[in-house]
Image 1 (tube, rainbow, N blue to C red):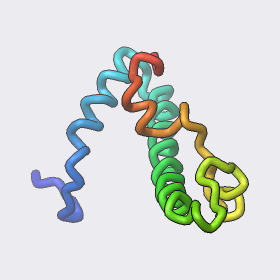
Image 2 (cartoon, helix red, strand yellow):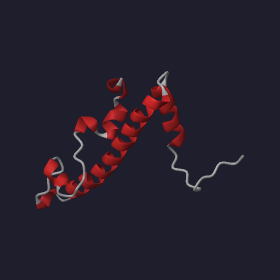
Image 3 (cartoon, one colour):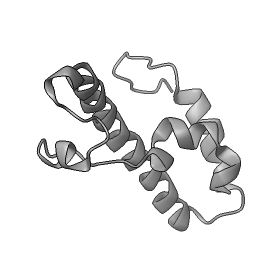
Image 4 (cartoon, one colour):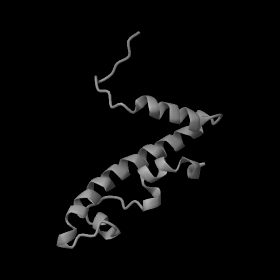
Length: 97
């Protein structure tokens, strides 16, 4: 049976699935969903954070501060500390164990 897709291939699905399997190990699926949903949420808020961070970095000459949490609150974007950002966590998988 052919699976239904929207025709898009983002290129990270297979890697994400392998990482999910590694994280899951012997964990019950009912518990595992909390881990996965947390990671998806972290990725989502980091993407929004990075977009605004880039904008604020470009606007530094106008007084913007890309490391000021209030800049993000003013735009209704979650402030993500450096140690919690997706790229940092991805680069340091041993610290997540």
